[in-house]
Image (cartoon, rainbow, N blue to C red; front, top):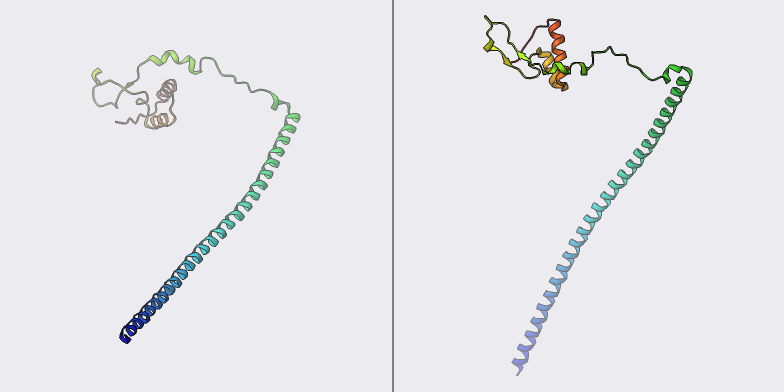
Length: 182
């Protein structure tokens, strides 16, 4: 019987040692986890503090810019008021500022007088190379019969047909050389 008790005591002693080891291991693991959690918390708090500092700097910058904007608006309003009062004084002092502008344009020079001539066909004639034949003549786009400089101006500014016709007539009267595009 003594042997049975002895074996039982040994197993109990071993099981207690195993439990003690397991508890020590669990305590060690919990300590490690606690340290990991504390490190993660510290990192999150540091990041939050950095973001708070950045936000505070941006808010301070916004406040400064807002103050500058208000000051500029006040200066702008004062400048506009000053100009307005000066103009009012000039209008009072010089009566011709109050008169409406009248334009005296000679009759027959406006775009409406050219409308009947717009129906004419614009013909492109290349520079002279030997005998001229009627079959060499071909209809050109609106602005092809104009010099190169005039063509670029017409395309850039988007003139209407009446203006193009007048421009072509003007250039032909003064015999400007034609630099046609091919």
